[in-house]
Length: 96
Image (cartoon, rainbow, N blue to C red; front, side):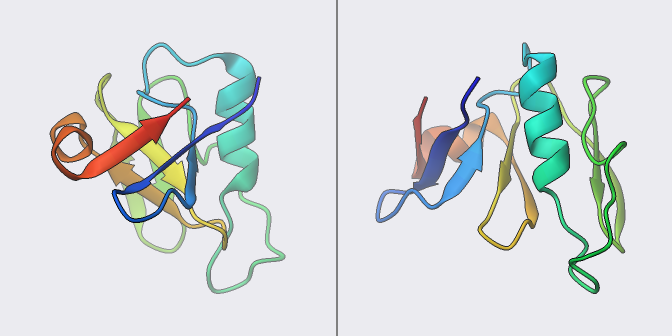
């Protein structure tokens, strides 16, 4: 599996597997492995960074519930970004 890209109409610089459900085990692992701790990028946080159960762990911040139509994206620094389907429909372009 490969991750697609997502971004505003100006740029597609974030990686995402697309809507959070359904998402393959391989893509869950890709996203979870890509999430980095912003205070210590060498500190691994996988497993548990992202799960099929709808939980996204934001390093040093806490957990967010991911709804089935939400998008979880990762920027080039390994920072996770949660986008609602409504936000993506209004301002973002998703390319599988």
